[in-house]
Length: 366
Image (cartoon, rainbow, N blue to C red; front, side, top):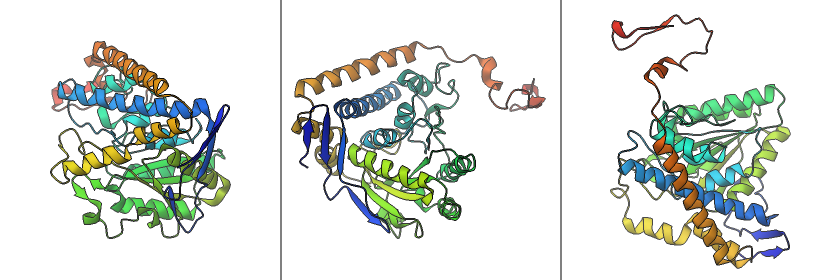
């Protein structure tokens, strides 16, 4: 959509398709920001994509084992969410968490090292892909939907303590049918907790199309007594605007919102899923060519004179170089010492005398 640049600021028009509301007015479709912030979001999306590409390559070279869920194609969501929050706000999500971990402040090296089980990882090599943490980022959770009530609990603590902050609790369309999600809705509205329930609808829960699993695929309406907004989750500006709008709504005392981010993952559900048995290659290519969040944002920046093609190519090269360097550091990091296996299970001083191993001979006494 048409927009205008003026000096150090730029105004974007998101268009009428950016939002749909349920029992609430939608955010403004006019977004004004500084030039550096606009370019910073482009850089961040490139870095998140390069980070996931590095993880993909490392997995295929058997440097990463086990579960690994990538967000390639969904970069607009973690970047847009973070750009609308403060450091005091909290984020909690499911296992497709690398982008959120990075945007919350973890280093790319720490994330890649964690994936490789190295001691320099953000969870000291013990968590892997699904269990990463950063300041006011509560994971990375492996149990489908379980992070949603935890997010409501974090929001309860924020309200109880009088914090001027909110919690963003993210889950996928596959998890949206979990009973605990609806229990969380009820308690959050009952107490008007400052929580944004954000459904990342990438059309497929593992290999099942949303329409085959859900009687109502308008996920933003599922809160019933909670207002909702559907957002173009492939547009980083729309995500940023919706989260900023939701944050102001939540911390003003009005309670929770349900937001649905319509997005798309290019790869499979996880690295063990080729992603082409339940959808066609043509569908994936169509989404790449028509709705890619990075390319779409790049066109906006060019059209509005925010940057030149050469400027953006330079950012692309810098992002690649940066992630390549972080990957090299992660590869060089040592594995954690075996003696550290028993650390970080209980808080030090909690009085737990021992931990059982697989057999009695492996019992560890503190």
